Image (cartoon, rainbow, N blue to C red; front, side, top):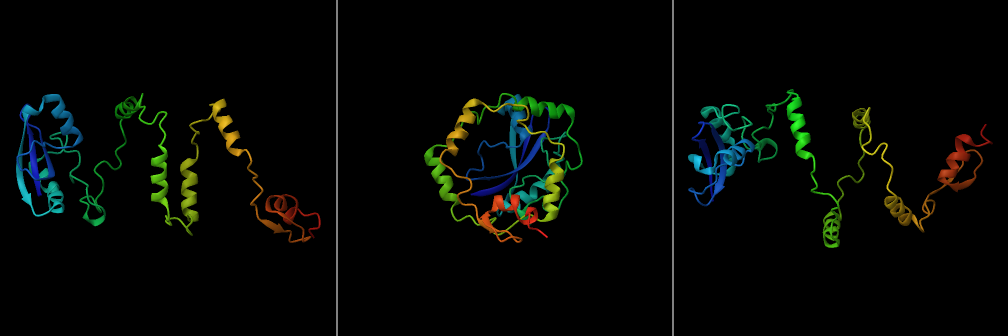
Length: 231
């Protein structure tokens, strides 16, 4: 497997794209997978593009790191070229990522109204997950994969974290506000609760004032701070 850095050229308008690629065949037809270069290939046709290998690297990591160098050298950043990021591919995590410790190129740049509207229009009619449900086999696999997951056991959010989450939700309107629950969903909820006793496994508590023992929910309602024997 060879790891290369290449440059793809549009012979109609002269725009170029720098990328990295792993391949067994140095003469393959791969031209790039960036958003803009793919759109350009679709618009102008593959016959109007050519690819040139800039460097054959020792490994994938070296190829990715060199993208930034050649993007700058060949001036292929949008709108002059087809590269959206000056750092190239972000295929590696942590300190190996070309963007590690660097400020994102679009930080602080608000999305334009035109861009926002395009995003909304692009999502209209998206039915990828409409009426979709996992098969029994898929559910079983998900369950098996989650067995023994101890990631959050014994952990809890800090007060600062909880405060940030509260503030992030202030003023938000629930997506289902004002939308009545369908009768079919109500029926499913009723059926799922049949035979269940919400108080069955509730712990027993003891009133700190009168010593009465009962379910915790009743204890907090009628005793402890609300106990009539409280002094």
